[in-house]
Image 1 (cartoon, rainbow, N blue to C red):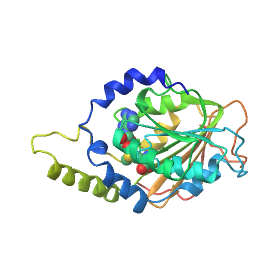
Image 2: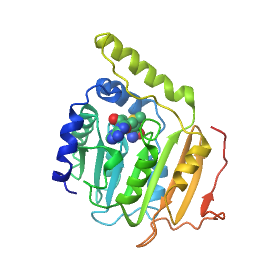
Image 3: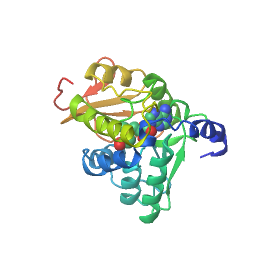
Length: 255
Ligand SMILES: C[S@@+](CC[C@H](N)C(=O)[O-])C[C@H]1O[C@@H](n2cnc3c(N)ncnc32)[C@H](O)[C@@H]1O
């Protein structure tokens, strides 16, 4: 994975300190570790159904924040090479220090913009995207970049919350804390989090030419497992497809 190619973007982005996840990184990390649902089991089953990824299989967590899934997977599968990308320097520092204290030498974190990752990241075998699309500026660009950065035969695990109140409450708490800590004139939140309806979620998934897609609901979350054609497809489970090549399994609920 080529760090130098990202250096210009990193420098520009580092000046963007007016960011919610930068200003209140510790509170988000706390919520991630203690409050939010953990999908490690579903991710493991989707990406590595035989439970044994080969040596140096590469996994990218986009918008990794505190690197929860990157670290979980690196711990569970020591053969993996795991990279987390985010634009919050403080969350990345948190993730890196946790990975170091857990001895995860093949798990690292890098500053970068998920709307243009494919230019600076070498192709990977698997991508994880969790709670990212609700905050990014250009969701379609992110989906296109994820598709681009995946190797042929690669797999994406995408998960987004569907419960608006539960999603907005931690963010509101972060806004309050940040307003209290920083001066009143400081504009800290250039973006608003907006959860995706099930239709918006499915449309975004369909925006890329996946060879196989499975969409499922897990409580207050919608998940998609998407395979890119070519190479060895990791998910051995046969799925029923509809006319558009979308396999919808499990109970659907309205977001
Ligand atoms: C709601 S958090 C999700 C963090 C983590 N994936 C999780 O499951 O908790 C969204 C993360 O996306 C990052 N982010 C938002 N827009 C980004 C962008 N354009 N490039 C890189 N990271 C971005 C934020 O800094 C934040 O850490």
